[in-house]
Image (cartoon, rainbow, N blue to C red; front, side, top):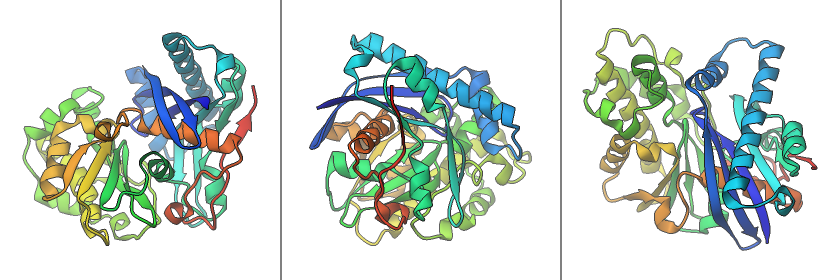
Length: 358
């Protein structure tokens, strides 16, 4: 049994998640978790970095250190909350914050959050940089969570797991395992909400619910070439942001919010419906689960599919991804592979990440 901490800063750029888990070869248990929220200025800074055409080395280094500092703060709060000390913790599995993700061919993925700083300041071995080894082996480097979904939930024919972060991804728990990014989850909705209302997100979805659909805008968004690609595939904020959505100024702002939410729901549900086997259960996790209007639309677009939270099967939906990176770190430290090559398209399963010993 190992006590492992997972750290995750997602594409929504709303905070640093940290969870303490107990991991064995046969299972994982969440002990406790915290989220250190980013201030509005910091959140805007990270979101701007994700879509910036050019970045100075100094700016990147500042962001790298800032994510590491938030990581250390989250670990410190988690240890104080649970009463544990650094010497009791086997490792930290740190996803970091994605600065760039460009899929294959000749792709790369870059996560910031200096693991040397984390290991030095926390006194706990830190494992990070999980995506690039998969990419070096010809894979997409994402999504990595389907391998964890399989470990935590097993083989469940007819069941899919939907993670709604800034980017949404699906895992189909059949055999063989399949998973990929479907496109935007919260990213466009959050960006629009922040631009129009100053709020970080449309919590509950009431703002979008108050608007009406703009059919021509929805059709234009759904015509994006990413949706015609076949798996393995992955995407990021470079491909889906408001700058790529076209001129939205001619439309009522509530209608844009409504249509962007419908776009996320449709792009997700289209992938469920085109899957080769029937799906009768969709388990949802991630921040998008809090957007009740989005979940209502997903449920309405998938008649006959039971849409419910991963909490119903014993995994807290808020901490699924952070738990996944605790597990991926545990796999690396034990010299076990972490990717699922049938998901990412890599030439084979690989031990992922680099180890920064305390």
